[in-house]
Image 1 (cartoon, helix red, strand yellow):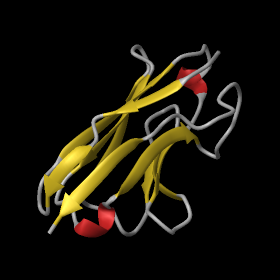
Image 2 (spheres, helix red, strand yellow):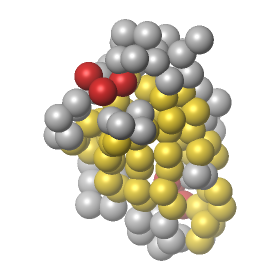
Image 3 (tube, rainbow, N blue to C red):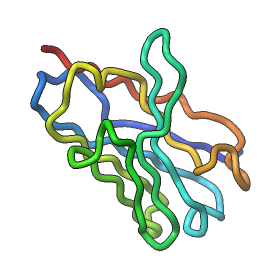
Length: 118
């Protein structure tokens, strides 16, 4: 079964940094646009950043200039470097295709919790 496994979350003070990783199984990763999403308590899940197979990226306005998405198609892994973190970045972070549920990636992983204290 194809899986997406997120890791790297934690508790950090405002202004700190974290690097999230998402390891993907399956054969289609290298040709599939991927995205990082987040869901804060009581809010809808939102797209944070996406990256296409060639490495072109897009960011939500709320994270532009602070977050960087990247991918390693040999390791089948997508990363999210998060700098200058703010309390409003607190959420569970997930990866999936962009748009979600493309090709063989039909479900969300378990996500990784990011908590930013003020």
